[in-house]
Amino acid sequence: MEAGTSVVFPGLVDTHVHVNEPGRTGWEGFASATRAAAAGGVTCLLDMPLNSLPPTLNPAALALKRRAAEGQCAVDVGFLGGVIPGNTADLPALQAEGVFGFKCFLCPSGVDEFPPVGISELEEALPVLAVSDALLMAHAELPEELLTPSGDPRDYETWLESRPARAEVEAVKQLISLARRTGARIHVVHVSAPESARLIREARESGVRISGETCPHYLRFTAEGIPAGATELKCAPPIRDRAAREGLWRALQDGSLGMVVSDHSPAPPDLKRREEGNFLLAWGGIASLQLRLPIMWTLARNRGIELDALVPWLCAAPAALAGLSHRKGELVPGRDADLVVWNPEEAFTVTEELLRHRWALTPWLGHRLAGVVEATYLRGVPIYRRGAPDPPASGMLLSRRDS
Image 1: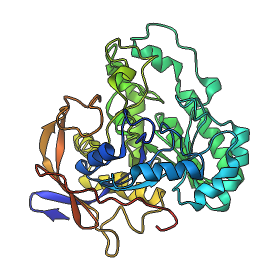
Image 2: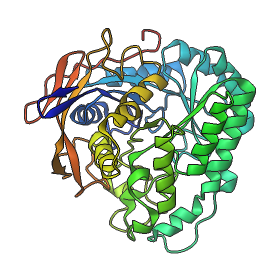
Image 3: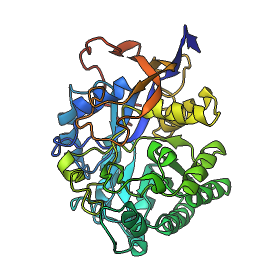
C-alpha cells in the first residue's frame, strides 16, 4: 500500500524491550523509550520483567510498574512477567493480571534480583503456564557451557570465546524437550546461532510449540569486524562470525525464525565501559528500538529482499506471538489503525541528536540507513510527525485480559 513516494506499513510491534522503569530510569524509562518507539514506527511494545526494581515477578510488582508507566507512554505497552526459582506460585496470579507472557534466563541475567532457572525448575513452572496457554520466552544459554574468559578484555574475541554457540544450541535442545513433554509454548529470544534456528524449525515441524527470534545486530555485525574496545557491541549471546550471520539470514528467509525484534537494552556510558573498552566488565545490551525499520530495510534491500518481507518479521509475527494479531500487525479492517508512513528511498545518518532513547550510545551511530519514518499513527491518531512537536502521550497500558 503506497502513499505518494512513501509506503504505509502496519505499526511495528516489538516484543523485546527493556524499559527498566521503575528503579533504573537512569538507564531508560517509559517516556523516553516510547517516544523513541513512535519515532521508529513502533506502535506497540512488550516490556521485559527484569532490570526494573522490583522485577515483575508477582502482582504487586506488576502494579508498581503499571503505576510508573501510567500517562507516560506514547505507544501501547504490554508487560511480561518473570520466572525465577521459587516464584511458580505467583505465575497464575500474574497471568490473571494480564501479562502477555513470561521471561526466564537459563544463565545469569546480569542482575542479581532476576536469577536463572534450571531445567528442574522449568519442569515445575511450565505445566502451570501450560494450563492457561501462557508463553515462556527463554534466554537460551546453558551456564555449564559458558567458559571463564581469558585474554585481553579489550579484545572482542575474549568475550566471544566465553559464550560459545554450543551454550545456546544445547539450551535450545533442552527447551525443545521441555516443550514436547509439557505441551507448553516456548519462544527462544535473540537467537545468535544458525544451528539453534534449524533445531527450532525441525521441532516445530514435528508439532512442538516452539518459535524463535533474532535481532538487527546479529544480522549486520560480525565478530571479525568488531574493533578492540567497542563495548557498544557487547550483548549476550554475543555477535558471532560472518558464517553465523549468513545462516541467520537464511533462517529468516526459510521461516526457521519468524521475527526480528530489538532486544533494546540501553545503559549509561559508564556501565558500557566505553572509555576503557573492557568487554568483560561492560553492561551487555544494545540500543536500537528507534532504528529497527530502517536497519532492516537497509540490510534487506542490500540482499535483494523485497520490502513486503519486512511486514511479517517486524509487524505480524511479533503481534501474533503476543496474542495481539486480532488488533495489531496487519492492515486489516476492524483492527487498530496503527500505521507508519515511511520513505524507503530517503536515507539518513544516525546521530546522537536524532535518537530519543535515554542514552545515544549505540553501535548504529554514524551508519547510513535507508528508510525515513515520516509519521506514526496509533488507532488513527498521529503520535509522531517528522519535524513536528510531539503530541501528548496517548498510548494504552494493555492487558492480556482485555486484548
